[in-house]
Length: 339
Image (cartoon, rainbow, N blue to C red; front, side, top):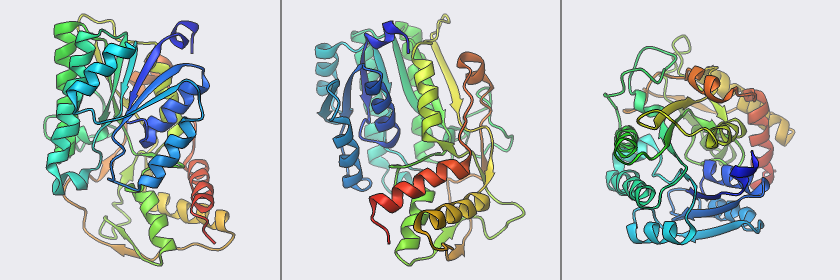
């Protein structure tokens, strides 16, 4: 990271979240000042979020504000007080399936909350706004790998619709107010201290609770689900690389895929996780498996073309799933004191 960027004040929303935590930690390790905002909600294990925050609090450069980005007054006051030059908006209500059961919170956080961030960037101009979009915007697109130029006007979940809305809102604000903004379409991020609502984490939980895991591919190994599993360190390296590359077009708004560009069959991923947990525990781990139909809102294959990001910053993920899942398994066994 160059010296000029080191002198900036960074605002990271969702700093107690999975990606937000790792990005904030990397920035703090680089010696920069980071203002973190998070509402520390109970969508998943609060202890995990508190553990992440405790690690961040060890750094002198970290200032934490517990609050919700849907609180416009709090957002405006924070921007006015700290005048961040770089804003990374990772606060959002995540999860495809949860959006079917709890739509209100998605509108509150992902639409109203993001609008507040854009308004703050309008009134207190920033050098670069980076925000989380999602691979889910590609909906049920059949053509893979997904490319940024693909048609994305047919979302199959409310979560996906909110993320597509974020891209449209950011483009509009970039057009009207020249806010340099970059959206990132994340593809299945995993790693230690990850989100317990993600499949790989849930599989480990189920195994150690003596329960079977549910696999939503109908047991069809020939036409298995494909996913672009992307290790957290590769994601953070991509974000870090983009910080100093704000868009400079007439409308300064860009959207990039950020993924592994190397899809894995879901069953291969599961077998690798079994092996990694076996290594971590010193005993053979085999999941009890139940096969069910694919769920509403899920899609058969999601993986990214990352050519645009590679052209922009030389982005190239370096972590194979066997290595990334081993790091997760070792952390999980230690953190939960699994015997």
